[in-house]
Image (cartoon, rainbow, N blue to C red; front, side, top):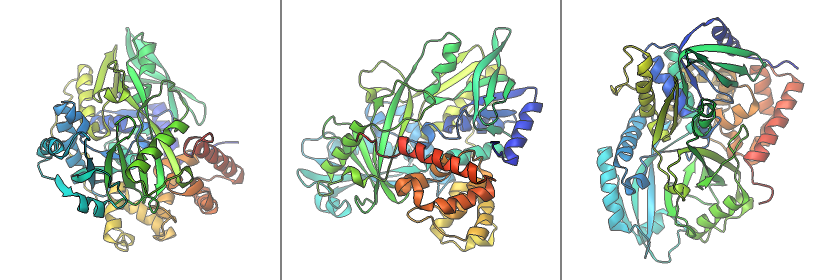
Length: 530
């Protein structure tokens, strides 16, 4: 059975075949890889980005969705990382409202718990100073119970309000990638880099396999950048280097908002080990996360939550909100991601630093570690490392915008309420009119139980490099995370859109649907043994 490929994918493959030399080849379609492609392409370099799975398939669709400065990094004395992160947070909120938005956070204070209100206020004063504005505010016990209904009252002193930002990480990746495309970068998902090629004892390109067709390509580039996150050791070990990455798994639960209502993010300490955690609203549901566990077996399969993690997360939520009585049957979906931490030898995984590191091994530049928030600065550091191979490559921070201004001209856009206009413009930027064109066919009807329009589903299938159904339902949209059983109830509607836009016949649809349900059941649902 032949796999249908979109005209855009066929065009990309044709470009790869006829291009004899690229300036830069980027391996990895997460936020770090697309950020590098965006910064390199804007300087006029010819850039090819290859991703072995789907765009944002790895950590960049499975993070805690927080664009934050990292208070714990401040508490550990890492002022530089915190300062950079807070300033980048402010930049992203300014440039992409609707995609990266301010969210209120509260830290409840209990007798005998560290840090207390005074110490925490000192930390937040510096945090706010980096941001250039004051977000922090202490509220007493009565007001805390009013704002955070159901909060445990035993020993409660009050709470400190502060602020950070929240995003849809996968949509953030797509928006940055689109900006890279606008500057001439080329990308291809489901194309696996197998090995490096060498010339004069230096990396000169790669051998890659198209996972859709099985065809192999020899691709030459002046410099190869590996931005593969938790998989970063793979190619360095091929060059005889020692592994440096300590993969850490962070898992999350998604709960119906009515079971644990919260209008803001709540920071808490786990009652067993004292680790910082969050309970926060996202896409109309409540998320509980995250764990921080070693995940040594990093391969081509997806990470998934383990039964002990389910118990761990529920225990924390029920301890802070004892009247909620959350049970495993309340869980709509789960998701787990693997953080690419550069190992410093800490016994406690949560004590490892989150700074990024860059290595240059005979023309293979590898970057790993770092935070979602600072992807732009990481990209500039990679360009600095690559400047050895390019004359007049500017890696200095000139404060250029990540996202170009976008404006909708479609009449369909004006039919939306202001908050939905803001959200969609943030999600899609200069592609907004193409989304609105899909709304002419679908209307502005939401997928029940989600914050996603059917027009967005159609647009993603039509224009966003969907190869498999899980690309569409778990990353381009979040239907698989927000609706029970992965969206099984909407099979016929999803089938209708996919058969129109992706040209899948009945046999192909059935295969895709069964594969998707298997992926959802194994990696995004409650573990069977739980």
